[in-house]
Image 1 (tube, each protein chain N blue to C red):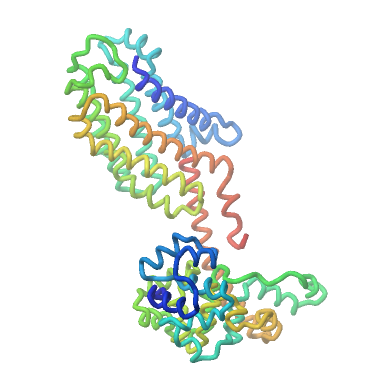
Image 2: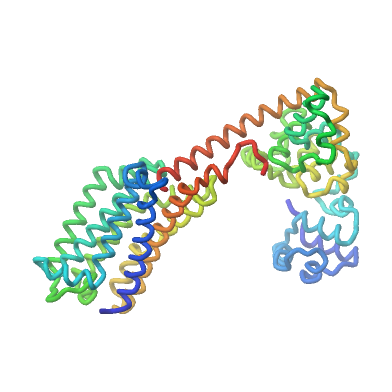
Length: 254
Length: 245
């Protein structure tokens, strides 16, 4: 059990779990809104992502994987959870940022086709990996080409979904009249950019030294954390009614 | 267009002021790095000249007039016209004046005897000044003189961020005081720009009823547009927090 992989996953799980729980469990203003309202896709995305990270924790991973028909099927399920979370997030953000191109790209026919192909590719890579035992994130077999393709497929799908959303998120970070909104969109745009950078730099990672893989993984964790905290800021702005509080009367000088 | 660094240094020499950024920073309170950058890049902001003049107890307008873009400063009267002064009265103050004149019983003037007028620049005050001095096509003439795009000038007016060169270009095209524009944009203080201590209060008392109502009417039109823009901005912010929050 390598602490370099366990500690970041645990931290991410704490962050994701607490923010998702906070988003859902706010009965006064948020419970109905979070799960059934306009932002329900965000809550679902948070739930899927949290499950994805939860499955990677060794105390969960090993017992679950021992019940699976093939080694590391739990990793596959975790990645499917992540893909679904990204698809929900991409579809919803494209709607929120008003980008019809991003919407077609992420959840239209092209988006569904890419999700299907990536899912099939992930299954194939897990089957093709020579894995005699369970290993969270298949890190013990990271040098095998099938595992590298497996990682690349996830990075590719994330980059595919976030690519058309970077510009709308960046524009909102400049134009949103609410300061909290500008900060939140800025964090989301920065997180998306990091995802694109990691996917773009994957050839370096592929041919680089094996130990540096943890560093590259940190880029993905940072990217996820930025997006999740950005979305949590929007939830905070809604709960605290920041629009009414900060923008006030259109006539006010104060 | 800021003033040239070489001109600025010559001017400092002529005033027996050190040209080192550290000494200038100590004199003006401006950040040393900012001053160093301005001198290195060859463009010194007008606000720096004003800060040095103030710190050295010089006449601010005379100090600016030593530099190329502002040499014409004294070729026209320095004092503002009544229309320029009134343009810097906030619409809320104009409406308060309307109320005072409407009923001494319901809106006694004494009620706000000790409350000053809203300071300028305030939202829309740059545009109000341009409207007050505009003989027609002023924005186009500003664009021609400065070589700046018309859309840039509109944006500057919308954001109430008229630059000193644009203010001077407007004054030149309108045939009004060069100093007034610099006062309106906040570069020069009213007292430094030849405004009487209570110029706005006095003009507000002297304006005729019909001119007051006409002025308010014009401002209300602008206010309607601004309120509509703010409403749209608020709706956008609400939509985003509702969808993502």
